[in-house]
Amino acid sequence: MRKTVGFLVNPVAGMGGAVGLAGTDGKVSEALLRGAVPRARDRAVQALSLLRDDDITWYTCAAPMGEDALAGAGIDRFTVVYQPSGPTGAADTKAACRAFLDAGLDLIVFCGGDGTARDVFDAVGRSVPVLGIPAGVKMYSAVFAVNPAAAADLIRRAGGVACRDSEVMDVDEEAYRSGRLSARLYGYLRVPYIPERTQGGKQVFEQQDEERAKDDIAAFINEVMLPETLYIIGAGSTTARIMERLGLTPTLLGVDVVRDGEVVARNADERTLLALLDRCPRAKIIVSPIGAQGFVLGRGNQQISPAVLRKTGLSNLVVVATPGKLAATPLLYVDSGDPALDRDIGDSLLVVSGYRVAQRKRVLHPE
Image (tube, rainbow, N blue to C red; front, side, top):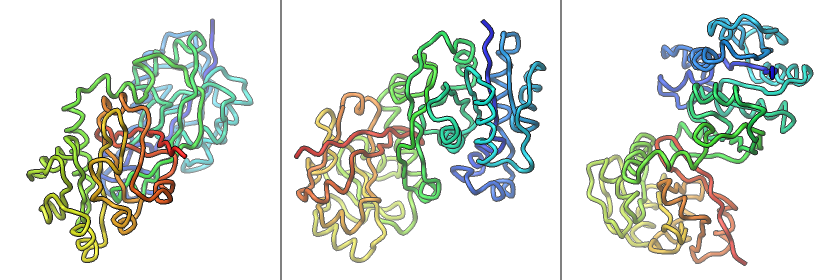
């Protein structure tokens, strides 16, 4: 049965990655100055080339927003329903999606990253199934196929497989560039779902063993460490790997403090931490939950007290855990000794679980 598909490309998605900008939102000019080249069209062509002979009626946007990629994939049967007036932006993505809705299509496919996913959600909500071809830098949202080939398979089988509600994440790129993961749930899109084809947290831990995951976490944390900043590193084998990657010997069951790649305190207690924070207020705390129990604070790391947390600020709390540990830990808990502070942490935490990969886990506050 012939299906109708709307297709669009965010031409600048992913340009910031290769030139070290950790994202492209608001940074297109800087990315170009650094020598970045567009990559979204090529990612789209990889997927579309596999659908050249399929019975699909395509609707798209002019030139770089879709037409070029379809032509590059050897597909010449398509209808242009949206024409951008100049350099493309979020408004064009939303307008194109509204044109797709007016055409009554079966599926909308976009090629981009989290920012594009948010724009698509703003325009269509849950009114029509949507699938993302991954082309951004981060892509924490669960609306993407795992790669372009998987996207082609999902497009081909759309209509014959169930859809699931998949998270669209709003990631603060400025915070990300400064070394802090700040994300919130933006909404849900209906996405065709096939295990091992559609992106999700479970896919991460099925593909990586625990030791590799620890190495990936350590690589990412080391990459985003800031100069002249204290890193209070809690107990555990995952956090220990961060120290080891710096060439340092960790205190596996204690709290160490690192600054500019050097240990400034080993097995530090609360007083030591507070004294260090008085001298150097710029600081981050890195902790890992206890497996299965799920305690982030208050079990094995009481040195990181409410007073320490207030000095650093809760926004500087970084949680790391391997996908395997998260799979066995359905809920997270905090028990710092200050219930009001615990509640301020909120109902969920973003947990770094790989290299530029994170999962959001619910925090339960039993009353």
